[in-house]
Amino acid sequence: MNPRVYVETSVIRYLTARPSRDVVIAGHQQVTSDWWAHASNRFDLVASELVVQESSAGDERASQDRLRVLESLTLLETSEESVTLARSMLASGIVPSRAVEDALHIAIAATNGVDYLVTWNCRHIANATIRPRIEAACRAAGYEPPIICTPDELIEADEDVD
Image 1: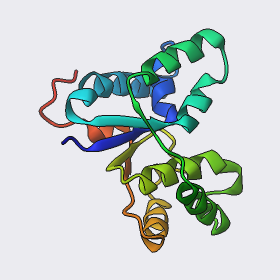
Image 2 (image 1 turned 90 degrees about the horizontal axis):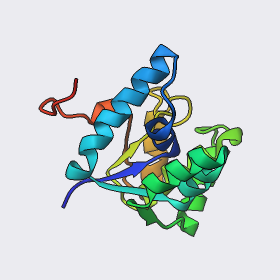
Image 3 (image 1 turned 180 degrees about the horizontal axis):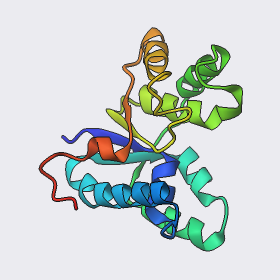
Image 4 (image 1 turned 135 degrees about the vertical axis):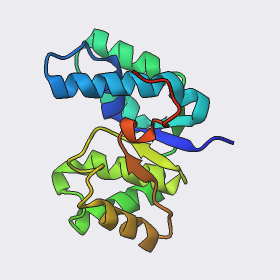
């Protein structure tokens, strides 16, 4: 059985967006594309209805591209336990109150026993300064936290990536 990876909305957006002129964003897009090309061979990719909702927003054609990508992913349940864990992270200030969806992504992944949460959201999710607090909150609630990382952290050394 392959490790399960929760694919957060930012990864889907980078994967399907038009190439950016911004060098950093273009680099993230390329890394995401390279990772995606090999990911389904190594991981069981999952998302949630929240990812679907977020991917549905915005330009109609762009949202259709995002939703098409999501068709191949298994959608995880957003349980009451997920909502409770997210509220706990928000109430304690681990995740700011304006980032409700970010807390919910983390909580859905944790309560569903996902191995990794892959994201480009380095402000509220893949952030080295808050990651230990996220992990502690998950464990205090009785859940093993997912390993939170960006796509480039899940590319193996032996993958043929240019």
